[in-house]
Image (tube, rainbow over all chains, first blue to last red; front, side, top):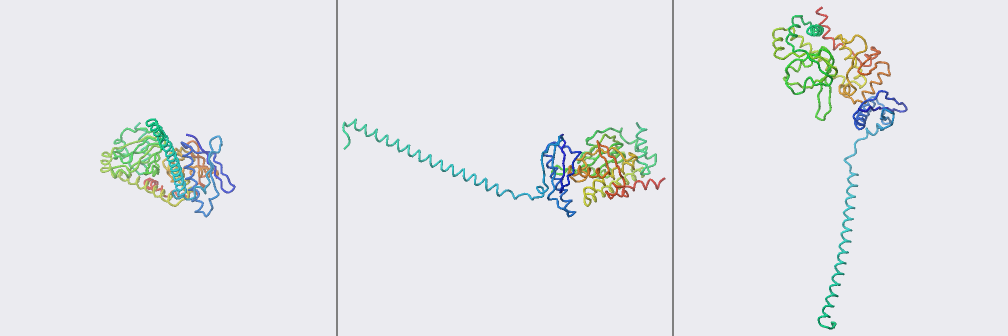
Amino acid sequence: MPRFFFHFTSQDDVSRDEVGTVFPSLEAAYLDGCQSALEMSIDKLRARDDPTNDSVEITDESGRRLMNIPFSDVLRPRQKPGIQANRGATEGAIQACEHQIRRGRTLRSELLAEYEKTQSAFRSIRTKLDVLKTGRWPA
Amino acid sequence: MLKVAENFLTRFWSRASLPVPDQQALLAAALPERRAEKDECLIEAGTSIRSLLVLRSGMACAVRTLSDGSQQIVAVFVAGDTLNPGELTFGRSLTSVYVLNPTVILSIPLPELYRLVTHRPAIGRALWLETATQAAIQQEWIVGLGRRTAQTRLAHFLCEVSYRLRLRGCNDDDAFEFPLTQSELADVLGLSTVHVNRVLQTLRSRGLIELNRNRLLIRNRVGLDEIADFDPEYLHGVRLVDQGDT
């Protein structure tokens, strides 16, 4: 399992993680990092300290920076089941419907025009057939 | 092999002032000792209890798994501990017990044990003492989980394990085998793994401990005891009986 390192920053004080912790994936490391940020925030709040400017950075064994978790992200209450997201999705759906309606109307008018053309062609053929039958043009 | 086991039992049961004939009777009732490797499940939660298990060497832990899959380690056992003295009365095991590092297990079948307890009151007393000791430890854990900060909680646990090992004569100096991983420590202390790692590093940077490759070195015992608010009185019941008898 890969080893991840969690460097905590509080004010200007950075405490480097020299040992690291193994996790099956970055996702697992991130979730545990969030949990630790929450626990440490609560400890700080109990001691009347402000955790909102603290953060924890996750790096891999080569020191490459993978993620940064500001404590304020963890402390922010979850958004209400996205009214924004739903409104966006609804507006998108309405626009798609309106587009389909416009397209339907265009197709209908095109079909009607085509139908008119065919009918007038038939009318002129019928007239010519009558001329051939009777040998004279209608009055 | 019997000789080895006998030495062990002498050391183990002597704390309960168990007379030699009672020790021998217990040994005679025990099944042949067996080895168990790390992560092996010795007792599965919910299964019926058939025997009393005694840890002859190594360490083990009792685990409760919650419905969301998270785990809480509710007890840690060191060499000489019995793994299920209280649960014998429940019929079914309430927790699962896993091996933390290679161990040797002694098991005494229940019918034999009941027979021995009936005829040899000292064995019943020894079991009573064992359950009382484990209850005292659990009470201390409740205090830790409920009231102690992460750092005090972790330091206290290290002090306790070290002290229990010393009581059993398993470590005489300040360095000893400590097989719990960070994630197992987190499950003991009700903390996240990353938080445990951070507190360990704080204790290290203060020159109190060194934890490397399953080996714990206590650099400054007085300092650690102080941070942990550690008073070993709750582990002394056993020793006091010892002293009273000698």
